[in-house]
Each structure stands twice: as structure tokens, then as C-alpha cells.
Length: 208
Image (cartoon, rainbow, N blue to C red; front, top):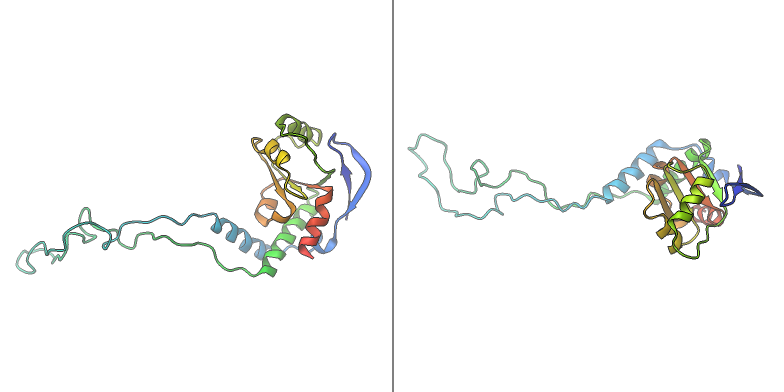
């Protein structure tokens, strides 16, 4: 699959980039995508929720009334979950929501996501972004030139560029990541995938 390389003015250059069919042209595996996205979302959960159960509630352990003869149910502690102020029954506990997913399956999921974008013609190859200083206005101009203003966009650069990152940080519906950070969720969560020219090789080396 060959795509034209666009410059920052939104014009197609004479250069073309060939995307590997083994990465951008495979038959997508929906189940692998489901598992990888589920794992990514699970890892984002803090898991620090906690309710005070019977053992955590402050209170006396003295038997609050005699066992028999009251006409009501027996009760042995004021911390009983049935009483007001008592502990919670089976309340949430701190836990890790992540689970194990094989590397090959995660790799398949990412390649499937990239293949979906390629099939939808949602990939734009852009000349390498270079900014002397963080300028949000300049970044917005580039997006306007590419007709991507207001479109949910994921920009993949070859290496971490602080100026590009800071320029895009306050812009809604756009995200800049390194090629080594490409993941299934971010790829599927955007309408247009903008890949820097030098990042294409980085992505292909990542999967090969």
C-alpha cells in the first residue's frame, strides 16, 4: 500500500511511502482487539476503592443484649452489618484490575487496529514535524492545512519532541505519541491517524 507524503502546508509532495502489508494489510482480529482494549482500560483503573467491613468499623465487641428471651434475633456485636453504623457486607476492596495477555496477542491487536485504519483510508503520512519552540497556533495551522481541524486525530512521531507535544497539549481532539507508544486503544479512538514520515520505519521495526 503506497501513500503520498504531505507537507505541513497540506500539499502532497512527490515522495511516497510504502506501508507493509504484513502490518497494515492483515485480516483484523476483532477478539484480539477486544482483549487488548479491555486490558488497557483495566490498567487505567486505580483500584483504590475500599469500604469498611465488619472488622474495620470502630466499636465495642461486647454482646449488646442477652442471647434469648428478647423476642428478636440474637445479636453479638454492634459492628453487625444489620445495624446502623455497622460494617458493609462484601464491600469493595483495593485490587488490581489488569490481567495477563500474551505479547503475540497484543501485537496482533495493534496490527489489526492499524489495518482497520488503512482499510478506511484514515492514514495520513506527514513530513517530519519540527518546531523551534512550543507554538499552539502553529500546530493548529498545520491541522487546518491538512483539513483535520476539529477531527479526532492521533499524531505519531518518530521520537519524543517536547515542542510538538507542548504545542498540541491544549488542543482538543488531538494527541501526540511516539512510535514506540502506538497502542490499540489510541489508534481506534481517533478518526484520522497522522504518521510522521520517519515514524513509519519505527512502527514497522516495532512489529518486526
